[in-house]
Image (cartoon, rainbow, N blue to C red; front, side):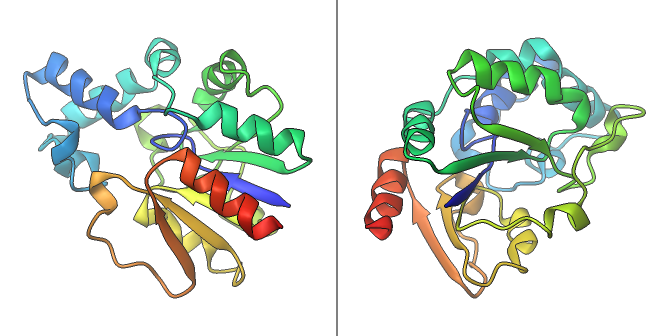
Length: 202
């Protein structure tokens, strides 16, 4: 069995961190609960220069390493790996964030999980010269049985996997989204995700 796991807001509480960061940088108070749009520029009502500054700060090693783990994430992934399940963490972060992202995983006892930076959103422009180590064409050659994802913008990348079961990690920006055709299920925590996957495996 192979499982795709998104990084931000599945493994860690990135949005909560960004809410505090934007408040510190621009004195703009947008609580996590009111982050109803996955487009961060719209969510925080930022002009181009401020958005670029926010994204650069957010992807600094200091910021990435400070992100709090989503409760139950590392325990669940390690149980899967112990059971012989292949776990791939596939993030939309640019490859310039790879080293800090890898360190975060290692620091949270996820050293056995693979990590890929996939060009999901074309966000590399805010860090000059940034690239990705996995392009969409490469990703489409990969196969998975399950995916854990929070971003509606990422669902389109699953079209080549008609039998994929997608566990949508509940977040404010996906509360009202309409799921594509296929096997999509909203999940509220890692315990639920683990029970569903283990139950289907029996």
